[in-house]
Length: 286
Length: 271
Image: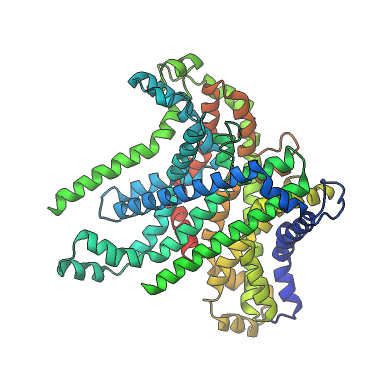
């Protein structure tokens, strides 16, 4: 097949048209609109960088961004630690290995929105009733403060995603040459040493992949945020994705929301690329 | 000594598995309780396993219709994503040219764009052309699903020798016949991966349907769930029955396809 042939374009056309109309054109239009006073109907006048400078003065947006960063850092660490631990557990000759994998992975098949609702019930009703039984006041009114809302989101995400990350680590752990581990055992390496010098370097590529996935998921989180806390109390648990949605569709300031969306894209792209760059470099060194 | 160690691990594993299932347990048992019972005993099993909550939730959710909408959108989108991405990736992998590499990187780069960055213009543009409906939604899923699917198919296609194409062409097959009868069947393992990854996110997607589906009666499960739950946060017994209903189809799917699902997810992440 040649690039100039008719069939080349015929094969490529459906998917190319879909991508263009759904991603490329809206992205370019969005960047253009972010420099105008567009209100969703009328393009409005060209306002230069005004929308962008306003974003950085916007306390609600900056709070959401800071909350998102904190959430991402904590949940990425939690998910990877739990995910790797689960992977090590199910690959270490336990008889129930298959069953365990099935169970740990299960939450990932159910939508974030639904999982958020389930946990809302747990945090509000179940925690309250456990609190009453054991007499712990602090279990009342979960999700009604900023910090319990934060930990609620972290717990939900860790429970949901650890199984997904586990599957990725398992793939690398099972691809690991067994002779290396056996040889090191014969040479008298301790469990810690084996983990530090053999297992860890060999699963480094898995770490790159899983960190990319967890980081970008955490940054773009919307469904779970919406259904678990709805951003409350007083928008204090609102993350960037949700803040942009609110600016656009609740407050109807489209151009301004779009400027936030462009900044969001730059942040997500930078974080993802920097992360992959550093992890790749680390892989090579090892 | 080894045996004892394994026993402990086994115990830890089963304990963790139970811990993982607790949220589902709580959802399930509370879906049978009365409003009062949830208030007085949240953790215990229900006194009576009565199905009233389910009957009411089933009707409120218009469950069969909602389930059908979700199935229709997911199946149609995934079939089209599989077909179009395999075709597109085939063209890109067989015609090595500047065009091909530019397009390939375009697809890959699109993965970095968060949905929120295109959301507002997307909705306004599609709104203008009166495409905020099921057909528009399916079209959008093809566009958003294309990136990862093209990427996965492209990798697999590079491992299929071109001499196969050539042999078939010499035997008189045209492009479409070569693709459809020879190449596509060989892509079956990667097709399973592509299909599973797309099924999971499209089935569970809430945000896009919430922006695109405006007609009553066309809602998908997550969309209907959102409105349902909002109305019933004070009526937890109905809400829990509704959530359980929403999850049942997924659990059935998982039960039958768990091996393919877990393999698909790990293959998708590694390639």
